[in-house]
Image (cartoon, rainbow, N blue to C red; front, side):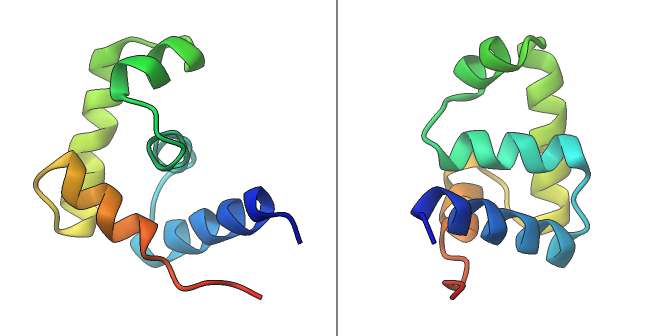
Length: 81
């Protein structure tokens, strides 16, 4: 199974675990791919404030306070086989 597919599957698992919305899952995938909120906003065709709003919701749902904490938490998803 290609790594990208495994990572996307892990992101979906995290979505279920933290009750993330489809938009929050997309932001999560963008951050895990190494994009900044500004870069992801441009790619997604939305405003940076929209991405920041999703980030605030992600912080609340995951118990994190900063983007770096969120990325560390989400990047340590258990490997799927």
